Image (tube, rainbow, N blue to C red; front, top):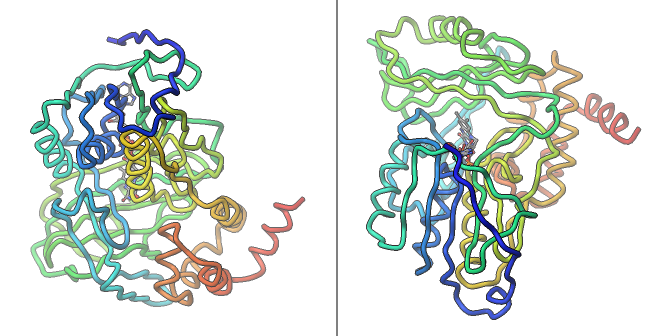
Length: 381
Ligand SMILES: Cc1cc2nc3c(=O)[nH]c(=O)nc-3n(C[C@H](O)[C@H](O)[C@H](O)COP(=O)(O)OP(=O)(O)OC[C@H]3O[C@@H](n4cnc5c(N)ncnc54)[C@H](O)[C@@H]3O)c2cc1C
């Protein structure tokens, strides 16, 4: 059932006063962005009402959020898996990267929601309305005085992305010790599949791992298309598995043009639907955490900047996507050069949206020049 909202004109008075706010905050969408925002508000000591709305009744859907480096402070007591080493594999060889200070980490979504709901339930000013479809608010809509609305309803299609990232993953158990438990495989180009496909392996022990087939393709690929490729990849490289325990699947748009986090004194929009998705990789979890922290600060203290990804990444990602789209057959070489020649720390900062100009220079120098020059000129033209 869609619930209707009555709204009046935005009220800027409290925002300008600089006093901590105690308005009611309604968060539309209690996924990663909405839930982390509620946690950030609580951590900041916000005393106004916080209502989380979601069409989902249950939050145990299979999903994991991975990223490099330190977890945001708000998640510091949440248990996470970490891999101090990660690798990229192709027929040309295996590139192993070790980064103990910035390990590859996983937040397992069902654990996160259980932990977060438990924490939020301990605060009387937090309420939940789950299992209901709601009409999402808009910046131009009227908002009741004393109310703040935050749209965290996730990705919405805007235009047609030139590439999609589709993936299907299984958590599998093997009879033999086939997985290196302290090393994640970020890309294995020996995997076959539609478009640019690669395997992704997150071992949790020598006998258990989450194994995914990811593909970049102009069309979305559903699970039935990816399944035989995933099965073949697993059998060819890890042998027979005894059980498939969990299944994760998804599709992410790889596009630079995305709506950005909106900002007014009483309406915000954050998450995958508001500029957090990194166009060239689909990573967005750390960006979502930064958006949530910034918006919580705005709501609580009445001031502060809204997080935005530095503009250079839009240009770099656009060129990268153009190359992947037009020079598909070079993808393995491009990824191999990128992960083989760029210094690990520069690469991680680049993937975290934190690279310096000299990091960017090192990344660019690691890539094959000709396809990128062609893409740059076609960009200019
Ligand atoms: C399977 C998968 C794996 C991913 N893995 C990674 C990863 O490893 N690392 C990374 O950085 N990023 C990853 N991403 C990308 C991104 O981090 C996630 O998509 C992230 O969940 C986005 O958070 P969000 O809060 O913006 O959207 P969501 O988490 O999708 O939350 C949106 C919420 O809004 C609710 N909602 C939507 N519309 C309505 C409505 N009308 N009424 C009520 N409720 C509504 C939905 O039910 C949902 O709970 C992954 C994405 C997917 C799909």
